Length: 329
Image (cartoon, rainbow, N blue to C red; front, side, top):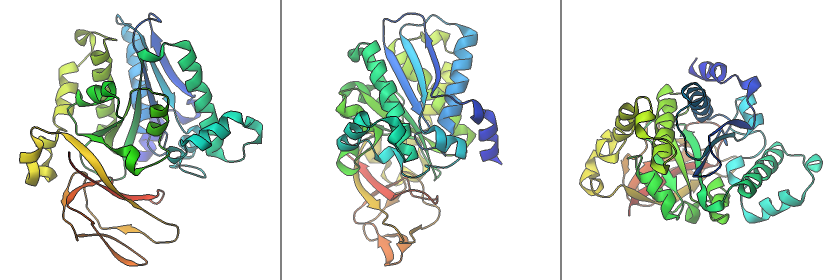
């Protein structure tokens, strides 16, 4: 039912590549938010629609430009994570270079067409605006319940924005996963971070994304805090997602009160036909111990290779990532 409500809310047949653009001056910061790189992650698309509706109605004093972009349009319309391949694993240099050269009409894979359209749009925005003004946010949700978090690239501007949201900030993604949008943004020398707002079809995920975007717009100087409706409420929503308020992370709370930056240390890759099945009820940031059985596949039990905290356990049919492990830096 919740999935149907999401589909109905965002008017899928009307979704366009550019969800919205709001500006009163071409000068100032440029904040680009991308939603739906995974087509089953609709909360970000909903949040962007809601924000642009509010901005259009309010017409607040605004410095700079805010742009919302839809990622995998065909997968969004189909209600699937992807059509043929995971669009968030295709942004490595060789693939990007090939798609920039290849004529669109010769592309046979749905995600190749999507990626080429996104590359063309992003390059056009880079030509339109000063590179030093551009900041990128990639909106996501997960198949498991639990805390929200940010994944930031090495750019200090991105990490400052991410830290302003109160939620845990994870670094080291580029060491573990190749081909994410974050890899591409980093290759363009742009500050970029992802925001994982919670479970796919939880309406709180939409509220958290709205809160994160409003906070970023204030932090960047695009809009005055007093002009954001319910700013204090949004700030409190995000504060409740901090690690020290996370119920499943309480066992190591003493390590987290003063250090909310976590390092991505391990990724369990799922190979085809392995019949991977995650053990039930794991939550983001739940402490796990070395040797603990986390999942099973055709080869038997899958044990944790180290002590740490669970991140993004797989509880959906599509996906190549079984789970991740993070630890305080």
